[in-house]
Length: 590
Image 1 (cartoon, rainbow, N blue to C red):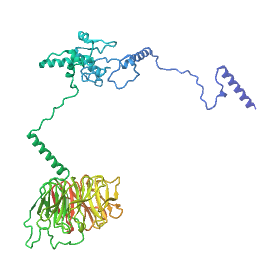
Image 2 (cartoon, one colour):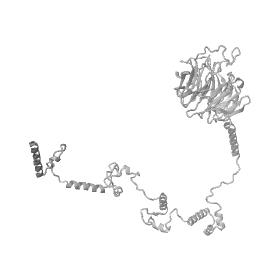
Image 3 (cartoon, helix red, strand yellow):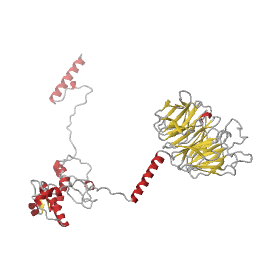
């Protein structure tokens, strides 16, 4: 108890002492609070007079509000006033310009020209008035009209300009000019009042012809003998052009040259007769590896080649030099005959079933039917349009039926016995490129520049199947598989597509042959006789071989310099292939 009493008395003494010295109550202080601060805060830095600094800052602010803006300055660090933005440029000459104007301020080759609020018509009016009369309106006058130049002429002309001369003044001047011209010609004196009065005969005589009527030619005189002769000759030429060139193909004399030793051998057999011992060695085809022979004779590119049907002892070639040549394959390897009957490049060729005759289609708009042995033209067909593809009906009893795909979107059918057009298939929207017979020759498939395939019944001009997809490209070459169940179509997006020849003509999405570059070229696609390989030329002169089952590239051959446009597999010798290109060569590979 004594200890507690002494503790209470000690606390009372501390409270009295704190009240005397104005100190905080120790009981009010929590143990977590900081102790009281008893010292006054003082700075040890020396005192500085900042009066001049404040005056300098104020002067700079005032200067920034009054100084002009530098035209070369890209950014402004303050808000300029209207007067600053429109103030003229002061200061020394610009260091990079002779006349002291920055490059960005130039709008004329002589410096800076301010925009003037003068319309171009008003400027031309005042300019021409000054050139004519010697006075013009002062453009610097802000109020009213002030004139510069010849003020006496201004008073004399009553301030008119060249564009507002009174109508009476114009008429008077016109009459005076007429009178002066007539006086110079020696005419009689005419009273000006009579000329101006429309009721007088003088006015009628002077105004018979309107000044705006223009010059009228006199009556045509009779032609001279020379002019009549020229007109008749010109009319005759025009008539021949209409009858010949526009409606039919160009007329060319047909010639043929035989290059062999004899047209018949000692037994009387023709030079086109196939060898009797020509037979297929086996049914298995092989990819060629080496070059065997090169046929040289065309002076320009070769556009198509065709082997003689079934035997292949001869090969026919169509050249861009307007000539068609047939070459020996088995023996001498020389050119046997040249057929000359076109005036422009030959586009397509086609043999009949026995090879004794063949068709040619040229850019001269003619289709010609040739005798292979004699080189004579049997018949000529033309519609006045360019034929892109020609085909004979493969049936033996319909070898007189000719189909031609034309540049005017039509497929035209002729009967070659009568020479008349028997049918026209007109559904395509572009030039027809290919004609391919399918389904035992009862139907045929055509491709066109309109990027579509159309299937027709032979003899009926109605499309039974129309194939067109957004992803499709033009297909300039189509070949039939030896089993006749598939079509290989050369698409211009650098791939070969396969279509079924059954009822629906569906695209076989599992088979696609690619790797070659054919965009822009109508490179021929073809099959090996056993159907195991697909081949095609390309735009870089190579010949590509693919495996039919796996769709993989089997081999490529560098065949030509330029485009390899055509390739044909020999019908009997299973490992030999012929190619042609735009270098004018035909090559034989084994």
